[in-house]
Image (cartoon, rainbow, N blue to C red; front, side, top):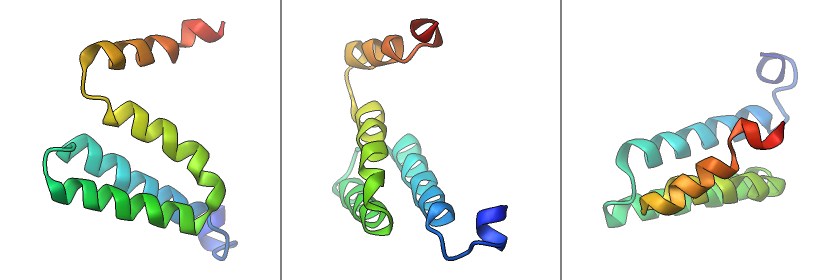
Length: 86
């Protein structure tokens, strides 16, 4: 709320919006068509243009949602399990 009302010039709210759209598109549509790849590429480009440091957050998002095989996805979920950090 603070970044959208008081500090509207900062990029936090815009980064959050574009990341939300990206995750929604990948989770709902997946990578099943050529248009899906184009949309993800355009959103990834927009994320990097808005705030270049967001590439550090973009890579894990694309890795997690872009993995098609169950084994790799299971390994990644196991790696990010909260018990691994305790």
